[in-house]
Amino acid sequence: MSLMVPTQLKINGPLSAALPDQAHADAEDLGGQRLRHVYIETMGCQMNVYDTERMLEALGKAGYVPTDSAELADLAIVNTCSVRDKVEHKVASLLGVWKRLKEFNPDLVLGMAGCVAQQEGDKLLAKMPHLDLVVGPDQLSELPQLVEARRQDQQRLAATQFVRRQDYEFPMPEAPEDGRATAMVTVMKGCNKICSFCIVPFTRGREVSKPSAQVLDEVRMLANHGVREVTLLGQNVNSYGKDRNLPGAPGELDFAELIHQVAEIEGVARIRFTTSHPMDCTDALIDAFASCGKLMPFFHLPIQSGSPKVLEGMRRAHGVDDYLAKIERLRRQAPQVALSTDLIVGFPGETEADFEMTLDLIQKVRYATLYSFIYSTRPGTRAADLPDNVPMAEKKRRINELQRVQDAITAEWMQSFAQRELLVLFEGPSRLQQAGPQSKLAEVRDLRGLQVMGRTPENIKVNVASDDLSAALTWKGRLGRVRITTVGQHSLQGELLGWAE
Ligand code: SF4
Image (cartoon, rainbow, N blue to C red):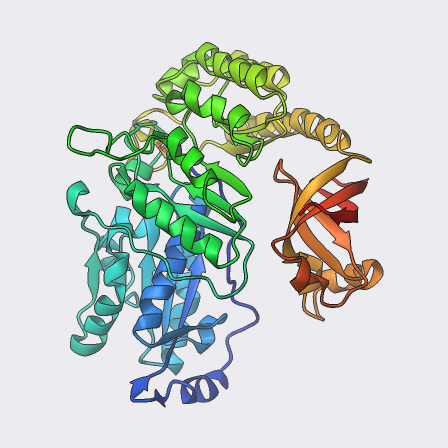
């Protein structure tokens, strides 16, 4: 399961009847090609963020320019996630809002992409008469043609077929022109595991690894455009290459080899990856944290529960002891590595004793941070057949307790950075800097002055004050030596001592 990230590109403000005239006056001919606007709302994990970028690129070639408001769009797409219950509700209410936009702009095409789209397919068209297009993750490169088909012949469409493994082609992303310091690189899609609570194998299909040469070409291209840090992405990223290391697939790398090869690329200063499965966590991958200086010391390794019985019910294919043995090896080889994990509370049949085992586990491992979720039944998963028999009040009590224990561990870990000198890769203006004049953050910014955001090797955000107006631009992509002056709950404040290169 991938890490959840905040929703992107939100609609701000109420719908306005005055908007369409102005907005669609802009949708005019531009050198013979009609310029149209696309708005994409992205939910869920980093894979969806990556897919949104690919959709925007494909649509860009067809004359669409991105807008940050659905009210100004000729095409509005919600890129969905079905991992959490609440996200599905959010999709339904968002589409209810967008439906009203069609009253002002009858040419507006409404689309749904991502995991909910894949899972529900044409049932969504039946449920939502205002939805024009449903497109699954394997069909994203066809998006411009599908939208055009909808515009031309008025047929509502659901394109959710999986492409056969041997025919699947990963699109090559366009070179970023925004001077970004960090980038994500999808190295594989799909998941062959069958965790009983998870819908991903049904919505993303079987594992397909991107050819190693293509991954390396993509990283080279990014490095040539100023990217210093790459995050290798996959639903189950450390099984990379298993499907390619078959007879007849010479020259392909496994995941640890891929990391070492990426590290050879000039310009790449840092490598991260997400998300891993303990079963595919090989000794070679663990050892890479010790032997590859560019692999950053932060490892997200989901375990989901500290109870062997619950793990069995989850069909995780690993136990607690073998998980802990991997952690032990990691700590022996590379003690500097900070760990994080995912945990689910209230899985069917989880008793108080099972939950206590999870608490014991986090005390034992002492994760730097963790992501905890209350179990909810996801239709279509194997666990949906099990009775969801832990009462909600009990689930809430357990998650609060879990978070209370973890917060204390995280606070102790964060305090260990006080007054230390760290290497920080700067990414650009801090969130404070980007806040609009109406934002509450603007007040904080006025107090703190200019802030440039970077990250430590352990992936903690650090804000550094600067009196140089253009610092945000000139620091971006540079590694600075920073002394930590203030420790917050989840971020740090520091002062720049000098440059590391
Ligand atoms: S490893 Fe398990 S939880 Fe992660 S994506 Fe695959 S099935 Fe889902």
